[in-house]
Structure formats: C-alpha cells, structure tokens
Amino acid sequence: MGQRDVVADAISKPIDWGQFEKLAYAVLVADDFPSLQKIGGTGDEGIDAVNESFFRGGTGVRTIVQITSNVALRSKVKLTIDRLAETGNTCEHLVFLTRHPVLSKLRREMISEAKGSGVTLEVRGDDYLIGQLSKPGSRIYARFFGSAREQLITLLDSPDPLELTDSRLRHALLASLGSFVFSPHARLTRSTLFEKTVLAVIAGLGGQAEKANLLDPVNQLLPGDRG
Image 1: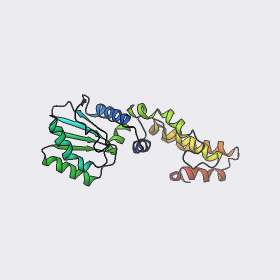
Image 2: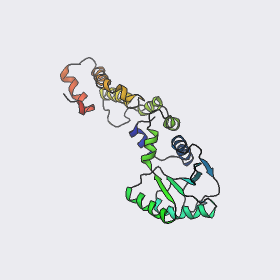
Image 3: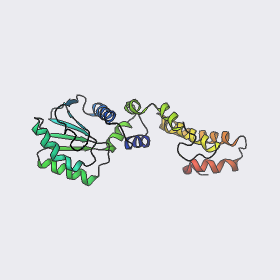
Image 4: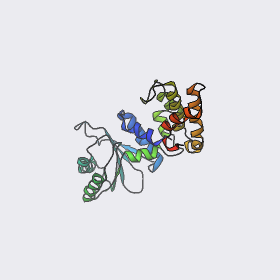
C-alpha cells in the first residue's frame, strides 16, 4: 500500500513505458480483470508516437482493455474502435486506462462517442490508479516504487528533501513526520504522532526544552494541534 499523496506524486512523474504497462497490468489483474491477456497486431506502428497496449478482458462480455500513454484521449475513441474492428477484435466493452487526469466533461464526450459506435466505454484515469495503489494490503506500489523503508530513505537521503529544513531541529521534525507518513499502519499510529513530534523537538533543541521553546516549532509542523 502507498500513501495517497505519495502515490499521486509518483504517478504524475515521467515513467518508462514498459514499467507503466507492467504496473497498469498488475493493477487491473488485482482489481477486476484477473484473466487479462495481451492482444497482438493492434499497434499504430508509431504514427502518433504514443505507447499503448491492448488486452482481452477475459470476462463473459467481449471486453478490450487499452493501456495508453496518450493525453489526447478524445481523438482516440473512434480510431481505437475502428482499428480493433479491422484486426478482428470487435468488442462490446472498451476500457481506456491512462495515468493522466481525465476531466468529467471529456469522459462524458468519450463515452457518448463510443456509444454511437455500439461500444460501452469506461475511462480510468489517474484517480483510479491512485485509489488502487493506495488500497490497504496492496503490495503493488511497493513492488514498483519501493518499500516504505526505501521510500523514506530516499526522502531523507538529502539534507533538505522538501526544501524546508534550515536547521537541525527542523530536520529532526521532518524525519519524525516522514516516518509517520510512510508507515503502512499510519491510522493505528496517528494517536502517537503528537507525542513523537514533541520528542523530536526536544532532541533538536539540545536540552533547552522549556514550554516556550517547544510551542513554536511544534505549531509549525502540526498547525492543527495548536495550544
């Protein structure tokens, strides 16, 4: 399982196509397409420099899943349906999967166009991937982006990973909060976050832990816990 904000950040960054295809396939198989099988002979031969793959859904309905790197999805609906028909891969249900955001208006337009061709279209964007990769118990995110421990080490590998820490104190606070954010049991440890943060402040102050010295740095890091 990945923390939602961390997952969203990872999905938004450039990803090698082969890696993304494997990630998307793993997500779909774990969700609602356990028998997904890749279809050959449907590529566009690089005409629009877009990477995409097609899979047969393996369900009772004739379903095709298209994993694509294309941002301009609106122009791809009829082209995809026609190409599938030309290669003998007609379908009743077409699923588009992309890691990019898909606005509601665009989604409705795409579904309407596909319906005109007799195909039920389902569009899955970044929100779908983030939700699936953030599911409790899912190990897919860690498989592709590293374990919680590896993510935390990467975060704290530089002296100022978030461009916030200008002192030993703030770096200690960041380490404490980072450990919390990446914990797979975050909800179980939430009740102890405040206490751990205060301990980090005390450590960072180097023994000058009077109440007046504690309040300001704690409030900076935990604005919702003022007082």
